Structure formats: structure tokens, C-alpha cells
Length: 212
Picture (cartoon, one colour):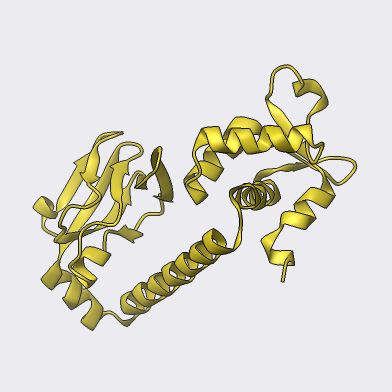
């Protein structure tokens, strides 16, 4: 592994920028990288790459198009930069690596189809409610009556990163749900606005996995 192909980045440092031409992909050696895409009111975090030997930026070597997202070091990070000829050699010589590329591209296509379908079929409030249910299922704390308690700011940041809705839009939707009593502040959070309680019925109604 040539040492000049190993690059280090400080937290917050840009690895590549959305829209620019790319001729390298990267294999993560240490640290973490956020993949960000511009949305109407800022940037949304599409994915955090933090598993050693995982890779990102490969589309630039597959379709020769501009970068579809920006990559930013989330903490002190070390990567291996791979150019086109080296990438092709890895594909041809390593069946496991080629299979991994195929699986990643398939998952990305499926995720894109889901996002397009959701954009077309649901209103903003419904998209946010579904994202809230998804967050609660994976990150919420189950309480005595089957409801899920979630941290308000953490959930809002997660929704912004996953569906691209602006923080103000998310907060407005949540406040309307609170006013309609679909959800509630946790008893200790009525003033601090720290934690929300999502009733079991709300989560079940907005859980994409249970809807058909």
C-alpha cells in the first residue's frame, strides 16, 4: 500500500464536495466520515461511514459523473485513496469485493426507490410522522404503557438527516401533533421540552413496516 495513497483529515475537514468531478474512491482506515447532501434549507447527513474497511465515493469511478454528496471528516480520520485503474483491478481480482459493490449499489437503488415513493405518496406531515415512528422504534425507550419515550432534539436531528425536512418544518409538525394530542411531552419535560412520549397506537399507525 503506497504511503502517498493514505490521506489524513482533521474533524470538519472536507474530503470531497458535492457537484465536483471525482477520480478517487476512499477506503476508511480510521475515524468516521459524514456523507452530506444539500437540501432546501441546509445540508442533510445521508450516512455516517465509521466501519474500518468500508468505502465511499465509489460512484465517481463507476459512472464518471459529479459527486452526488459531500464527504466530511466527523473526527480525526485516515483513508486510503483508490484511483480508477486500482479500483478495476480490485473488482477483477477480488470476487468478494465485487459482490460487496453490487450489494451496496442494490441497497442504494432500493433506498432511492423508497425515498421517491415516499415523497410522491405522502404529505410532509405524514413523512415526518413515519420518520418519528422509525426513530422511536430504533432509539426510543419503552415505558410502562407500551409508549416510546424519545429525546426531542436528537429525534429532530435524525429526521433532518434521514428525510431532509428542515428543523423548523419538523418542529412545526411535532407541535401540531402535540396540539392534537397524538403525542405528548414526557411528564418531566412539559417545560424543558426534552423528551416526547409517542403512544403505541401512534407508532403502530405510522410504522412503515406494518403498513401495506
